[in-house]
Image 1 (spheres, rainbow, N blue to C red):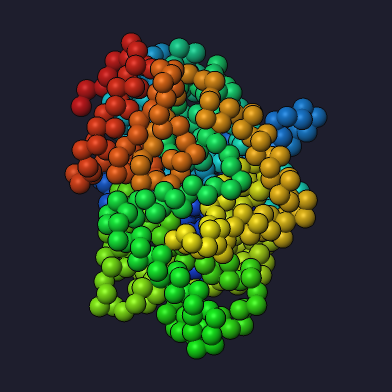
Image 2 (spheres, helix red, strand yellow):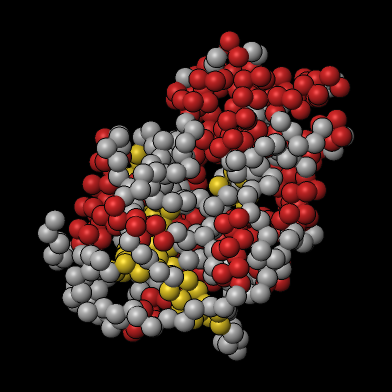
Length: 512
């Protein structure tokens, strides 16, 4: 029988302290959703409703990981957290191993008992691992988050972590070479799942890549184009109402009385009149307002705890003329999202945001993932969701320069536009962008999800199959199935099961 008792050491100090602080420190800046990311990461938890299995324990386990996989002379190591579930494991030489890849937020033990992949594991008799991403959650490779230390936070190092982990677990648990490892991931980990198969095909036999952006792009202008089309899918008039509301914000900004009106409508933490000459503050204000719509669209009706406000809800408000003019309705939408984030006011001050993100302590609010993920965007991916057309729905206040400025102010003056272009080109060259040279990867996307614009959604190559789910949002296929799931989502999960069966040809399914 598989045994894990007493095998893995526990790290000291910082991990426990961080967990306690995370439990008692409430979000202070109202930035529930930024850069396409929720405060607890892209994917979050696996189910809106607790299942009977959630109460079962999934203890923290630890693996001694290398700090730098690409410099043999650097022998430093650190403790990386992982989880294991052997409940459904067949424990024979043909039983598959499922690996859930952690991303830019704390790994949740709830995924070890819930989520679609657990049902696949039950069907195929798989052993399940989840590996937390370096520099997130309790996996602290360095004593703090200085820019010098963040040099060890790259997708390449993360993929090497996975490879090292797989090799070690094969030895630790006496897993046969005939046992196929299948990687799962959603959003950025969806990209990692595809890239893990590409870079380490001798270890990862296949992958299910959900909502993974494969194309790195500095100016991700397509993001808000999808947000608009997703709003229009509910009612075309919704987009027009949003456009008028943002235009009215611009008008109110021009006068002192209008500025006070905006303070009242949007519950600003500080008076807008104090920032009217500060273009960075105003850009941040507009980006926050647009982010309200982006966050709702990205997770619309997902069976996850963070999907509490839907496109229907916000469009119903934006089209409700009894509330007042469009700008007043926009204020109501903002209030809904502030309430959801358990935040009392909208903090749009640029210098405060930068100051918060420059905090390098593991105890800081930004250490929950925002500082780390921002660094990764500045150093590898871009992914900046911009709006820079005055005639467009969300206006022209937060163009790509606004985001590049943040890279320079938070991390290094050297992270300028030229640097961003270079690193994004390197990323695309290294991984192949939308022309991956790999096999045994299934790419899954939802039409509502803005991130599908950077993913592989259709292909004529049978070696790179895709599933494109109409009417679903970010990582919808990954969450715990529910009776309310639309038929096309149910069909997609069935297709994933059939694809896994093809990869695991010769498997013996576990009886229900």
